[in-house]
Image 1 (spheres, rainbow, N blue to C red):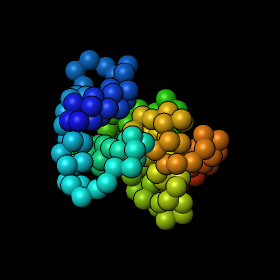
Image 2: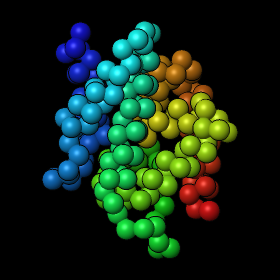
Image 3: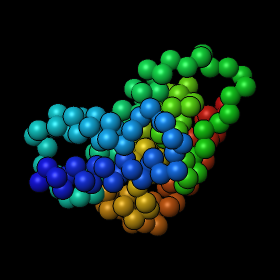
Length: 165
């Protein structure tokens, strides 16, 4: 069982690191191990299916990336910042390493979005932080792929507006 779960986590993390520059300080294995430690804290959870596991893993990876970004201790926020891209190709790992202050801003905006729409916030977790496809996100959240596409577009627009304000 452990090997199957570990393999799933490693694939999830590896998807996000594809195309990342050499020498990135947050490795796939490190992220997997951190996520595994987080998931082990949920010893009483009854995993419903693969999608449920991946959704919780995406939440754990989100927390790890935010903690990593905060620990990076980048300069205070300034006026010349660029906005975090929430396109399908968004790379939370690169942002956590290179633009940690922007990832912290995204986390704050995502917390506000969660008050507006919990489902949209969970979709962002799965897609942006978990690197999941539309179909994987739909499976994890037990909704249709069309709903994921629609809510993902709305969430990206809402977050982009918040980040530009």
